Length: 203
Image 1 (cartoon, rainbow, N blue to C red):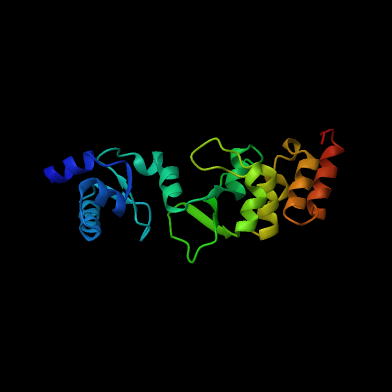
Image 2: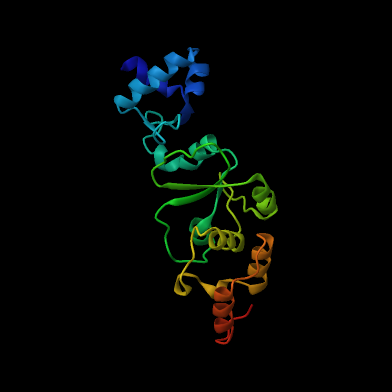
């Protein structure tokens, strides 16, 4: 295990079979075998079953938490944070999502990743929301109005009125987001916005 420890010290905190093969000058089959042995020894941890992405616990025991976004970016190129996760990050809801909601470009299948809930969208959809993305971290996230509109239209999440901080939301911004997604502002949301405006909130 001394040799394995030294090898892992030379590898990055997030890696794939290709990373190991290239950096240790190994055939892909051998690199895959190494990763399997290291995982059994508790020296690495897979992002998820059959994802092909691994955390190097020798380099950083906290990598599964600290480098999660890097691993997701590696596994799911083009992914953006959406749904309730984007709304919570923007302060539009106090509800803490049970899992990280990701929107990913359409692909043949979706990986199973603990604590992550991926949903597919078309390339046309991604072109629509591209300019409004918030790029503050490793993974970009949807603007909250667009995230709410997409979650509502897709059925991903239709929040109860008391789950949203309506006083944070300019009505015009929300109307524009629904229009971008090809639908008018739902009557249920418009009704709540009108009720809040009567209590002195400005839109």
